[in-house]
Length: 288
Image 1 (cartoon, one colour):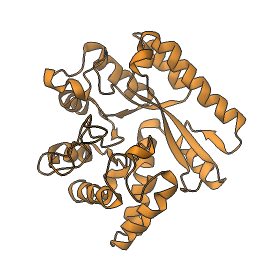
Image 2: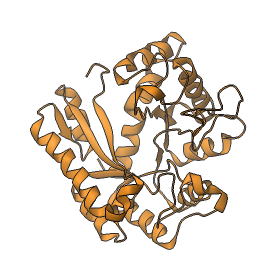
Image 3: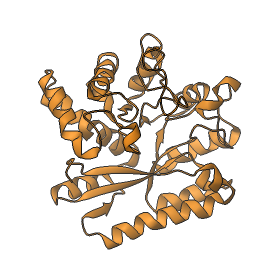
Image 4: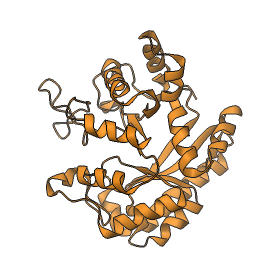
């Protein structure tokens, strides 16, 4: 509420230790989300864009169930329909690791795209109206999904695993385990243009940037290449160690809006960036 956030994607992500009991763990996390909504009058589980708009009008926060990696399905795609009935509205096929659907971005050297089960999963997501999130997938899978889908996608956060900063100045992050994120041209131009051509939205990450100016630099790079209809938030906060100066937590989000406005970006651009572009994709894929 301090950050004036009125809709939040809430992702089911399974650590390596949980994958052996993936379906049960996924269902437990979804139960917890439903339980939070039941016990908290200020929260709403959004299944439609009308739910999001109504929550905003009523001063509530809309929560949207998503997957960051589809491991919570186990190996049975029928469970996708079950999760959809419980509110699942967006999902990435992978996190960084390989799974039975596709290679994650840390497996990219193996050049693996989608498996046959992954292709079936993409088709079923489209049929159900679940937004496909391209985050963390290996590059070959990225292109394969875009060739296969007929609806707009998102790439919910520009992670350092997909868009690493290759400059020597900011090469080490979290003890050298990860680079910092940074859009680099011409390296990333083809991917950004492809998302825009699809009608999709790229979410710009906060976490792992040095400061708010670094975040703004990437936002403006994306705006230049993709156009204002295809750029949105992708904060991915998960701890103070990784937070940029000036955007230490989500309560600081108004500072980002103020900075972009001070740099001359119009109200129309800001409204799209702060949620309007996502709503457009959600309306087209969800059907309302």
